[in-house]
Length: 371
Image 1 (cartoon, rainbow, N blue to C red):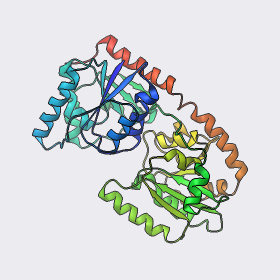
Image 2 (image 1 turned 180 degrees about the vertical axis):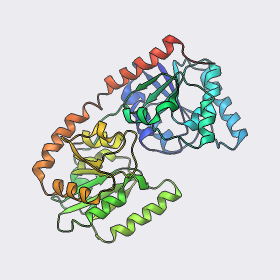
Image 3 (image 1 turned 90 degrees about the vertical axis):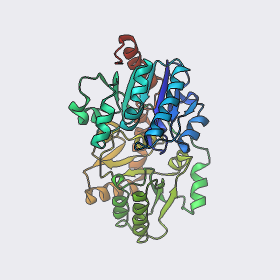
Image 4 (image 1 turned 30 degrees about the horizontal axis):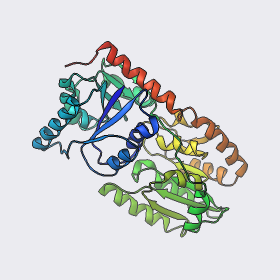
């Protein structure tokens, strides 16, 4: 099955890591061979090409520039005409609105992969709704429930995003700790989320500041991608001044697996719900107990055997959860073993891709695509 993913490509996060997982280097070509059509150059295109994916450049597109939209649509028309596509998948209302008409005119089934239930701007949602997909793939039960009637009569399937354990080098733990000057016996709390307010970095730093007598360090991996995120980063740096030398801002890192291998706990106390939470899956696969908020799809991934779910914005609960894991190595070890076991449910790539292929074949076989 040949699947073309049409995507903006101007940012890199959980969706883009999933697209990388579907590239030939990881998912192979059977039962799905993924190719990509991207609008913007940058990390996403480079990452997908390194993973063996064929990347077609459509050119940069701004939704207010009609000339750019028509040029990109012509480029996609050429890609569609020169390939044999069993389905074309869009990953946002933006890409559905801009490229949906071109896909439908080609006769290929249009699939919308819904990565979050929250609607975008009304005009964007209305624009995308003009191109009715043959199938909507929801990335979690939470997304399906929260989307509700907005999905209308379009067939819907829930498929957790295909995931894989992140690779790490044998000496990653000692190497990163030595580089940062982190003691071998320090308990490291890691977060690898985007630098945005909804991920709760500030709550984490506030709670850690109350655990001054406990031997911990915090590593914040990830960098700001927008102006608002840069302002939030400055706020986090100011908070970290209260615990000098114990918080490291590592910025964007290509080897996230190494950082997880070098840490002891993953903590991301979300203020707003994650529609899935690929970072949680990757942390569990690395054997890290996870502390997060009981919001969104987190309860679909983390249970009491491998982590701690806290109530939203409850600083006391977060502090207690951190203390319970930082001060009790036996509890961490027990949860670490359970975390790896739990991750197998999400990191069975063959099973995940086969399930996805079955859903896509059903669309093709029943000819649900509208023209």
